[in-house]
Image (cartoon, rainbow, N blue to C red; front, side):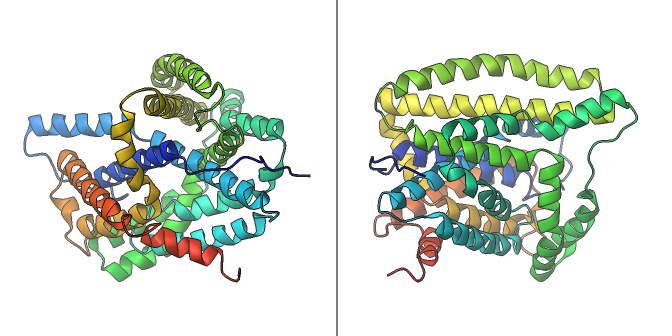
Length: 393
């Protein structure tokens, strides 16, 4: 029998701040990748080639994997809050959440019409997976999340590679779809991009996510988000800040250990394709997890214990409209870089692309502040909310 918390779940500003940081980081990665279209012009000089490579390397080191992890964890937190709020009214939110995931799939299909790297459909599927966990005991959720954190699929392939050095990594066929995507984005019209996104983008995202551990990681972070909601760790109450300090120190130690481990250990078994790939995926996930916790705990402590709160709170409107920001970056990013729009993949290197991404984030940020002065939610957030509660008086 599920028992609600009995405590009010007020709006968590620091969660909106983290969500804003995450969506901004995701957009920067997408822009530097040319919206999942890895085609770049030759640098005009050796110096620019080095600058572009440095920008690429630093962007992926700081943002890749960490921003998605934050975004996924906050997705789980939101699920818990929505469920607990309704439970306090005597309402079972699970059927509504399932319908909400169907709606998210629709948003994902819409996103695929412009951007073939959509994550919304994947999130919706993983959302269905975690529905049975929302009423489970804390220990069950925690140990399931830990099991997924250990990357069981990758562990299996590591041991498989050790037993049989000639074994190959998991291949579900994601590579077969890339050709259709590249042709549409590099040469096609907007209709070609839309059709390729639905035909190739949807399966390639799922297959790649399974092949590279992203599916299990997403469910893992959803579960950790539910636990954070249950423990009310994002509220400044009890000894929560002490817990965040401990998380910060522990994740810093873990990060210091895991960074060199990630770069050295897989190389030691490079000849063993199966073990090399498994170790690379697993250690990269652990490295990103530790850095994600560093960011989350660091921002939370800065917000509650320092004057930086006055600056951080300005990010909150951007996080409140994360769905709108995600979908608009797909439309605008596709228009900027794909052939059907301005085709800037032919002209913009890594440095120019990430500067464009930063400029676009500023425009989005200003729009969010303006919009939320007169509206409770962003445009797509309002649509999602209204559709969620269809049929309810």
